[in-house]
Image (cartoon, rainbow, N blue to C red; front, side, top):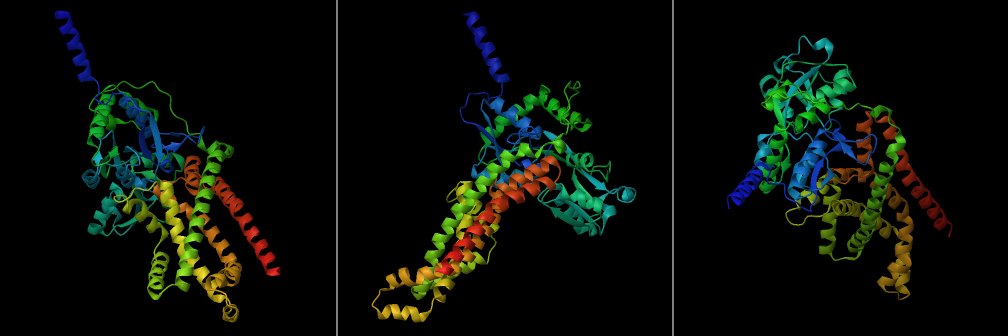
Length: 489
């Protein structure tokens, strides 16, 4: 009996010391990040561009292991992480996500797992006079939009007249600083030190403007998983696993030692060397070609929807009653008068409480319905361009309106509409790059990830342009030949 009690006690103690998430689960642990953000957070692996690496990638692996689940990465634009997490696209977002009061109010956040400093970067010639934000009154200071640094600059603008300059990426702010387009950059020390190593041409002021923390963001209602992740993070902080990861990625410092509230032995780990600039472009071709296939499929499906819907709208505006014509006219004007990017956001995120469309389906619908408005105008103009004399002659012969449309009006209208239809398809092919904001990794997004990984847009840009031309030029030539053939008959 005493032996049985002892065994039960040991099991109970072990259960208390093990994170509660350590339960087998067949579901994958899906986490979202933006590989365009680059190392050391998340970046495409130079050896295998279909994989990602970075300290957030390794931390996500620790979390998946602690949860007893398989890890699965989901590419998402950094600015869309919050919306995608509430849509349920993935379980947690980790890509240098900052702990901010407004973020904590909207979502469930993990405990902080890294402490960073907001630091000023200035040109060497300005290092003596631009030490603090107060010194930069009336000057232009760059940062990323929707970050803690941006909010600090906006607050400082009200006090001193400092001019915040918002960017969508963390590469161009430092390039513009070196070229003299801005006077300083305020960003995380992790980003600043990475840019200094890669590009140089500026100095980092030692005094921190503010302190911040990186966290994992989860859906507001997903507190159970958040608590399990917190248990795992605390355990990995205690056993030194996080310190080892941060040392590997060269982001461990005295601030982290104090933040973890313990003295840790130096990890005996190798340093990740940055070999991206020498990586052969051939290694990235499979990823680019896969993304090109997605772009082509997306464009073809969206164009098919646009042609079908556009033809119906055009027919309704030509043959419909005044009420029908008014409704479809309003549709055409609203769609053509608002940005397609806004329509994609509304369709994907705005309607998620009503219907949660898959990202690819939302992309097809968004682009297809947008271009349907333009196609409708092309077809309407082509239908109305057919000579009234021919229409009256057909009616005199006793043909019905349907037969007149099928035999007389539609064939001639198709010839007139062919050239602008082709132009629209080429334009749609290029506009498909916008769907990356709703987590679809198409050709341009994959190229941006590639460019971030190699540190240059020259080779990736040339490859991307070549692929787009390879897809669009044959279509244009086919349309011209068809148009010439029809003109000869």
